[in-house]
Image (cartoon, rainbow, N blue to C red; front, top):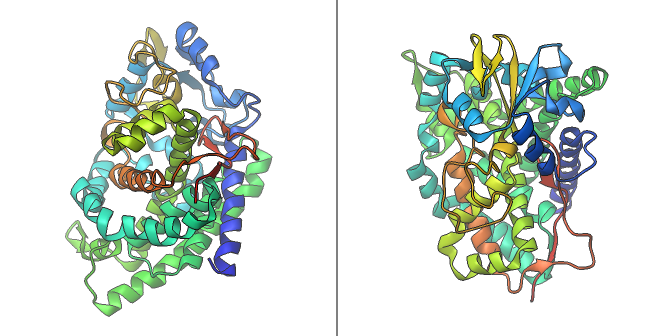
Length: 430
């Protein structure tokens, strides 16, 4: 990397850690799962927002608005709420950083609006398209810009040197942005600042939200001229921008400004969560070398490995919904207007659904995990994210004798929400 890229990667790392700090709050234990186990057994539908107890920003009660909140921990309850879009609404998801992107968030849309926009935006994210990108974009980028660069060094921090930058570089290429890696990391930092806008304390939010709003403006200002130049060129290309230039809604094509808004919205989820999810997977595999050896010796297990590690350590540990009318969950009435904080992390370890729920078991008989959401709001970029991680793990396992570096502390996955590791120092044989 040149000095500019290194500087921007350092800046991006600091913004990444700031997001981690925001969503860790006052949680002193790095592992919240014993607490979730107790709550799942004794209080599966809890009065109040469990995130507020640890001063973590919550989709269910942005900036402590005073809205009543209940927290839900069992798999069946969480699944039924995510599945029922008629009675459980998603609009509150946009209450936080949504304002920084002009409230254009697919995850905060409901009913026909959500159905129409998702149907419109979905084609470039379908599995056959993602598989096409696998060999044309994803594998070449990971090989040339990362694995070939790292191989001779024999050591790395898998977060800063690999997991943090590669999803951003890949997704910018899929979007169709110019090949400017310095700009890629700069504007990934802007997306991270938007995510860090909502804070638990309203006084802190008053300081961070103007930064998030400015980041949203700068991100839009970066994207718009690229869209305008692409339209003016008349060039037809197989990428997301090319798709949006041709797409129609209500009988008309989108303006450059509208496309820039959609792209900015998608950028928020494109890299950061994939970075954390991949890093969480590597922590688990490095801590269980016998499981990593299984995958190294049988690469067909890679998709299962991603599913299982995401089940055990989901990055997006909470989602929020609000009932359109009074609803009953596990015998408890949730009044209309009460937000619910759905604990994906607790649901994914529910022993009623998963045998040996706290164990890493790569060959586990699978049932739907909730790590990408579920139902109509299942993560639209799921296929691209999974394929990115499949290729990234496959290529990393080719490094001989990949192992934790004993000269550094063992990596720790932290946070109540947006869980992840700050660093993962590893060695391999050269």
